[in-house]
Image 1 (cartoon, one colour):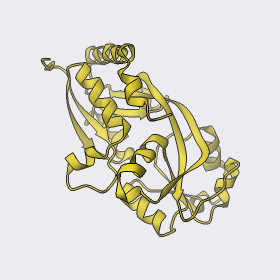
Image 2 (cartoon, rainbow, N blue to C red):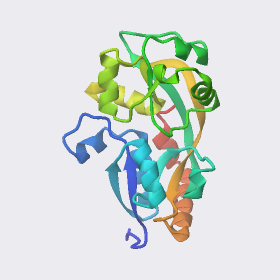
Image 3 (spheres, rainbow, N blue to C red):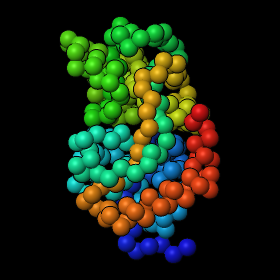
Image 4 (cartoon, rainbow, N blue to C red):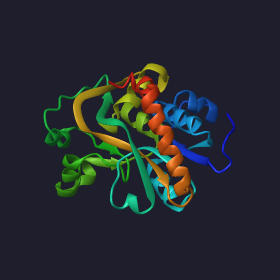
Length: 235
């Protein structure tokens, strides 16, 4: 099919450390790269992936330097600069720990009892219960620390400098099965947050016409079962 010249989108993706170049990083991508490729190819759009930290990518979405982010939770602030289409899927946030140091969690308060801090992303959405902890816990910096680099997170986890980090369950399952850096991680069964997530499009670089084109493509993916095929390993 001929690519539409008006639909050319820069897409943020998250790499997971062990790679020689961007092509290798994409080979260990996880769900969002599969989803973006399927959607943009269905819409006959051209695209380019760029690897960016979460917090920086949100600012670049606002300015239009990137056009698409996936697995985003809508907020009033984000809706000022981004369109949200979807939902894309249901996202499950979990605590990722080291297999050699498992922890039992029965409540959100148990997160405050771990021997080392938990790594989080700046500006990520972890749900109301975690938000309450972040806002109301004294000396919160002793319990949670902002770390955006995946390679650094895994290294700190390995050496016991953090107790774990919050991450999307499917991506961690994928990495633990495919990426040698993640072979020693364990997904704690306690669910931190579960909610629908959406595809975010920059209002600065994605036109309403292209937004509508992508919405139609998303609906076709749902009707043909292609989304179910992409999501089949997430349940």
